[in-house]
Image (cartoon, rainbow, N blue to C red; front, side):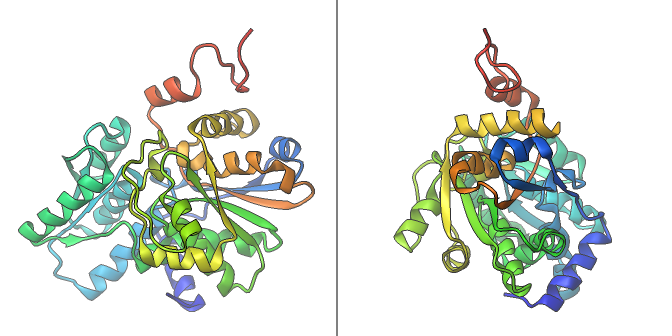
Length: 328
């Protein structure tokens, strides 16, 4: 998909707009998991999530190849749209984003604040995406898909940063939405000649990639009802699946309850706010704690964009204290 020189150039594009994100070893997490733990903080980007890297690289390449492009359009549950709005503003390009009805209010506000025109359509991401493709044809706009080699190239820059500074990771847990993050990690690892085991993470309520991994072919699902909207995918990308099948060891499924527990752990152990997908890697590591004793573990905290009301209802309901235990 790309070579190391291309990845280095993509990293230059990204760091022209934002500094590298930190990777911290948190002692309370290490104690909790019985392992050496390094967290890659993609919640510390200008949009609060890793996808900004993909948008920056995609639009830099698009505007070089098509300097007269009239505008771009895409569909999202939030972070992809913020990425494109942020990058589009830097390039002076109009950005139209389709979101499903009932989408995150705060993510919608952020996309609009970054300059995107927002259109609500359908009951889930797939319906919004299909309508975005129809509108792109009607309006002559460039459609940005949810998965594309240039998006993977961009998000792989976080893996380059992490793996160059933590070359001795035994295992790396990565959440899977449409697949760009885990594919970027797999490709960066291989380009750097490392042996880190890469484990994907999905929701039990949106397991399309997990089912596809087990079947060794694309398996679509009829629903994706997880509260972790960054992983709410029904239709896996065949190109992404091929990379995952070749480069990941397994895909772990976690429940929304396990994700909420991990979000509370991130708060108590690191004082970082994680959105659902952002906490999924930690949820999987906690589930597989028995595998990790004495090992060096990487966790991708992919984003921190969660509505306050959803956080209050899901993560901090009445009767649960900050450590995730039932209150007396």
